[in-house]
Length: 160
Ligand SMILES: [Zn+2]
Ligand SMILES: [Zn+2]
Image (cartoon, rainbow, N blue to C red; front, top):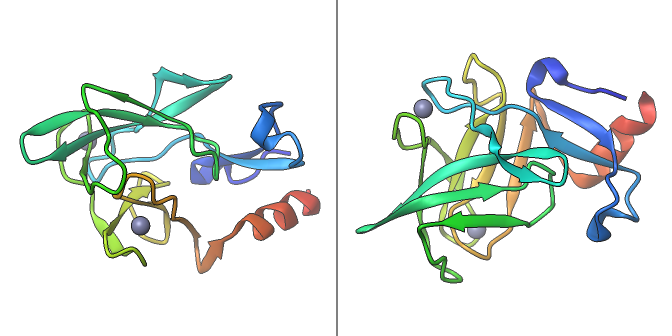
């Protein structure tokens, strides 16, 4: 059942949270890194039994923390010290060292897609990219040459 645990992710049987109850498997990010190799998955932010992804967000004078659910496709998030306004665009930083996370690409919505590296060699070949616009749920998981989609995750899970 465990997939990619050397790549910083695992696929678990779906937890019983309502929005995922109908899915057989979910992708859970178990580790992801800033360019200085700080693990952004933090036990201080819990989503059900999983540790969340803790990020620092900045927009002008505003600065705060946000925890994202590590379950791919789950849009749950908690913000601390920030009032997130829908469609506002933030810069994503590492809460540990304050480095700005690298921009992987531009999202279809026009905001930047920031990369969270899935492996400690901090390569764009294995990363999860999240949009910096509040309310835009576009995200991409890159695994080697593949871009994982929800369908691909279900397919991978079936092969184990
Ligand atoms: Zn860092
Ligand atoms: Zn977007």
